Image (cartoon, rainbow, N blue to C red; front, side, top):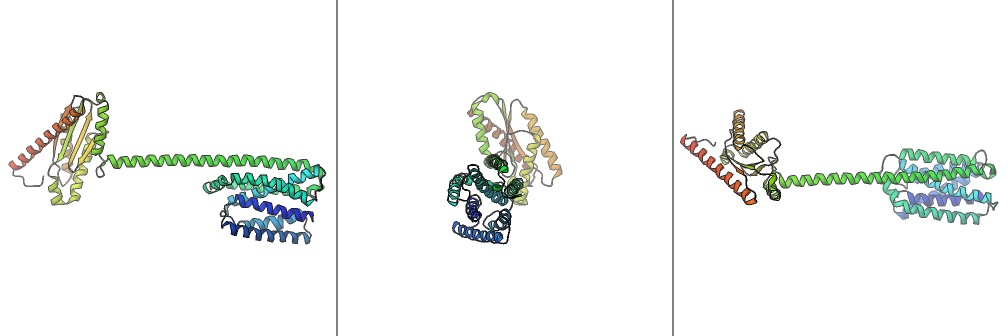
Amino acid sequence: MYNTIQCLLSCIFLLLGFLILCKHRYPLRRMLIGSALILLLCFGLYVMGLRLGLKTPAAAAICLTVPSFLLCGQLSVYRDFRYVFTFCSADLFGIVIMGLCNSFNIVLNLDVENNRLLAAEYLLMFSVLYMFLWRVRKEYLEIQETQKKGWGSLALLSVTFYAMIYVLMGYPAPIRERKEYLPVFTFVLIAISLTYIVIFQFIQKMKQQYEAGEMEQRLRTEQKEKELYSQMAYVDYMTKLKNRAYLAKREQEFQADWEKVLPMTCITMDINNLKQVNDMKGHAAGDSVILRVAGILRKVFPGTEDLYRLGGDEFMILLIGEASWKDSVASIVRELEQDNAENEIPIAAAVGAFVQREKGLESFIFSMKKADEYMYEDKRNYKERCHDAENKSYL
């Protein structure tokens, strides 16, 4: 009778511990109904095993542990090593408490068959256990959800502890009949408890590492988004050159410290008769011309940050420090000629340049205006040359 009552109490307490730790597959009401049915079925199998002549440890292992392991899996969302570890751990916590209570009763020569005393001890100890499990439940469920690796080793360890305790409790006779082994049994229970403390610290560390990785990934994603937004805000979509917004930003930087940028050469460039190219050859051809010009500028000014497409057929180059604007313009013309020799549609462009040597934003604006004036003068000269030669093409 004592073994039967003890088994019923242990089943109830262990099942409650499992319900706290596992991630529920069903609503709470269905979980409680399912747990009650599992409890009745497994306890009935246990009683049947005892009547068939099985010893208490064997009946508990065969008729309680195995069926409850298979059936409780239907209540859990996870059915992998996370479930194995959770199930065995919940049982181990309960077995450790029951083992310590029984050892305490035996050492003090208390009535080990006093069901009321046993129930009171179980209620006290399991209440402490449940408070601890409920406190770590949220964190443990988060770890189960986020960490999908590493549970195999933990499951193997918990199964090993599980088997070890069953052997100590029942072989070659029940532990209460082998009082000389009681210190060893108690030591093993305490060692398992301490091991689980280390395991929970390890699990918390896993969670911290995961959160740190998540934070790093989030920061990396935010940085990429910032770079993308910056590119969208400051980079011309077609040519990937800088745009007017970036030029305004650079103006503010120049204003903060002119000493670092002067002298500065401003080169403006305009594609001649791009509209005629679009009209006669189509916008795809016009876009191709724009991209070719952007490629030429990158080739002539490698590593230069201040290459701009200001819109349509307008481009600008800012050269920081001493630079020969004549050499720069000559390089642009030379690359245009080489590119024209390799393509069906030739490119003609008007170019103007001006060197700023005085400090101040007004001087910078004046430099851009002067470069534009020289560029438009070059454009007028180009049109006059075309008119004089009676060149009726679109270039």
